[in-house]
Length: 106
Image (cartoon, rainbow, N blue to C red; front, side):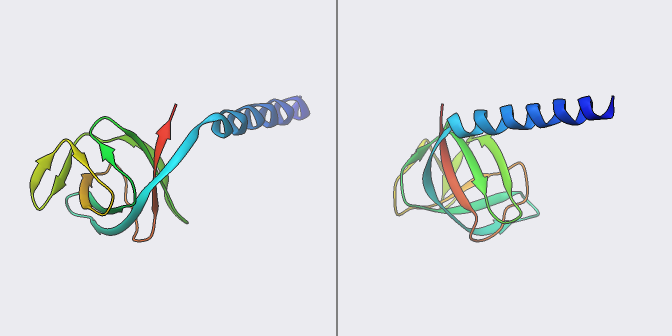
């Protein structure tokens, strides 16, 4: 019985890896700062992003996805930020300087 459970678990893991492989990602930038008390990350953008984009933040200890609900530059809310901007976004988990931000293309 235990072998069957392990085999089923392996099949589920294989399926999950295939689903992840189907997901396309495009690099948006790097985290340059994280304000832990307010849960805000600053991203130095290498490509444009906008409110409503689904992003993935990945690093050595970071790996999660979320939707961009708001973007700020110099305390001003904006609907979109462009390459070269240092933009702030609210994040749902802790991030670290150097983490990479990707746009998830589904």
